[in-house]
Figure (cartoon, rainbow, N blue to C red):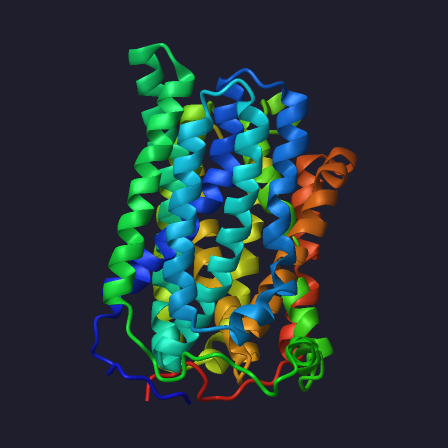
Amino acid sequence: MQKTEHKPGNKVWWWVPSLYFGQGIPYVVVMTLSVIMYKNLNVSNTDIALYTSWLYLPWVIKPLWSPLVDMLRTKRLWIVSLQFVIGAALALVALTIQMPAFFQITLAIFWLMAFSSATHDIAADGYYMLALEQHEQAAFVGVRSTFYRLAMIAGQGGLVYLAGKLTEVSGKPALAWSVVMFVLAGMFVVLGIYHHVILPKPVSDKAVRHSRDMLGDFFATFKAFFTKKDIALTLAFLLTYRLGEAQLLKLATPFLLDPASKGGLGLTTAEVGIVYGTIGILALTLGGLLGGYMIARHGLKRMLWMMVLSVHLPDLVFVYLSLALPDNIVLIGAALAIEQFGYGFGFAAYLLYMIMVAEGENKTAHYAICTGFMALGMMLPGMASGWIQAQLGYAHFFIWVCVATVPAFIVAALLKIDAEFGKKE
């Protein structure tokens, strides 16, 4: 277990929330706000869909350059430097958004921001593992997830609302979005300064080099990951743990919005915002916080099966909703709260398992590789889910989702986990 310069009672609350809130904002800017901004600026749907979809690529392929973050300087320096770079990119968007060729220019800047944000993710996750002891990593895994989700809410809710109100007042969408981007740029400059001051300096946060051959070290990092003990089982767990949820997630909102004639619940957009975007997110957050606490108290091994069950059994909620088609909004909200709480509680085990797999000298790069497989495990099933639902209808689709959780149970039964991992000593 690594030693750091902090003590267990240090100011972890001073930097974990701000670090992961800062991690979430550029992602939501690139993936969500850019789409709304271009739509407000009358860019065609074809161009928006085509070009903004490619902006997701840096997060998918970030494991390819993750060894460089390990090999060059400290994770702390990467974090602070990249927050200033993201702030500068946001300021450039604000300055160029009113130019005639704004689409091409801002798209190029968003590409810079996407690569910077993906690299920031690598450094932040690596730093989290270096700056905290194992039981603290477990205890705060729900906190980091919560503040990342709060960034999603702030971006998709608060910033979009601000842009809309400024557009109403000025009548100029470009000016409104310019102001929003300047606000975000200022926030990231403040974040960079704040983290430069507040982030601890773990003695283990240093460049990881095995030799003077940088290219050799680069490939050695990948070799070290793919030659880990039981790596095939590890990859199977990463790819199957969310196999059902990856499909359900894509169709949950359409199911809530579609009318009963199409097998849906027929909720309004506002009602979906309440039951899924508010009550659901709150339940998800509480589940994540409790999950982190329980692992810190009992260890990952002891909690694994409870968490596997909590992720997958609540999928039956959607089977019930699709068969009964209730119109009671309170009942629907309660059912969704149960499903989201279970998912939040169980996802803590997935995050801690990736931390366990990444343990070692190249933990930053190895954790990034794990997250790459996590993204793949969400992307591929999600791509097929729409076609499957169209063939089966909602009720049978949700039954299929429950069947798709079986591989996760099989793989979880084969895992070998240290009984003390994640437990507070």
